[in-house]
Length: 367
Image (cartoon, rainbow, N blue to C red; front, side):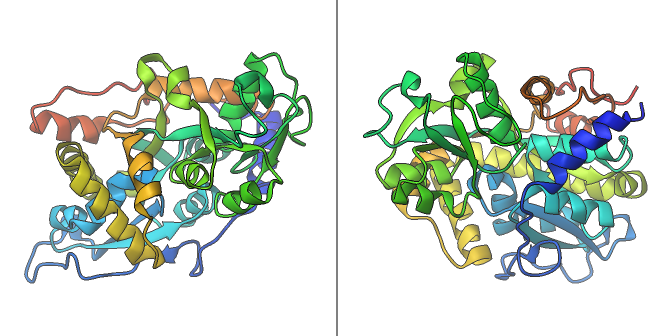
């Protein structure tokens, strides 16, 4: 269903207001190649492709991609087709790379996936798999905020206007009976939109009293003296909500389903390995972070951050619908038509081959 003009305007506001933090080279920096996996000489190309371009963020909620890269799972499944990687700092820049055709498949949060889908009238991307749940916390300065009620009147950071954590905090604040203007962030609580890279500095300087942020930023704040006041998982049924999806360009999905299936096999393999080797997987993910950014996380940040994330192939589609509803209720989004945002056909094929049950699209698959 075509988006209304009001929806276009609302989404346009959400798209342009956040600062697009682009990493160095084009839309996203090329993840450094440490030689972990090479194209096997003489191996058959998947779908006849020379390469498949895979994007992800350099944070632990994208642990599936970090591990699949470092362990060589993507390359193993793609055979003679080279797996190329790009690391991103912001959801809008990854969506832009997908839309421009410079990226084929990406790991991304729910809000940018919703925005990218609706802005293109459902024509440019599909969610084809799940990756991770959880890993989001409200961390506060314990000298200023001693209880949930104390959050009223304080300055709380979120990563971007309209991003997944921003919507979650605005929804939670509304449930407390507090009024906040969604665009300016002013009200009974002041919402400070602050990039995750600079939020720890703002927290240490005292310019914010706390932050509703994903890992590892939350654990960085704790290491700086912060206290976890609320874990977002406590607000969701079964303590599960989507934090990372796998998305693909619709054109690429239509033309190269075997390549998409290969990436999904690698993702499923990575999640299975992570869940069977939690401690080792944590180290592997951190090694890939070091390769991509030049800096690994210290143990006091890595350990608690990794513990709070759950890796799952299930995209937890019903929670994506709820997150969209929260954005509407917060005044950041007109009611979107998300019918068709999921295409889980290839994922369920991979899961069936592995002897595992199919996952559900909560009625948001193609009709």
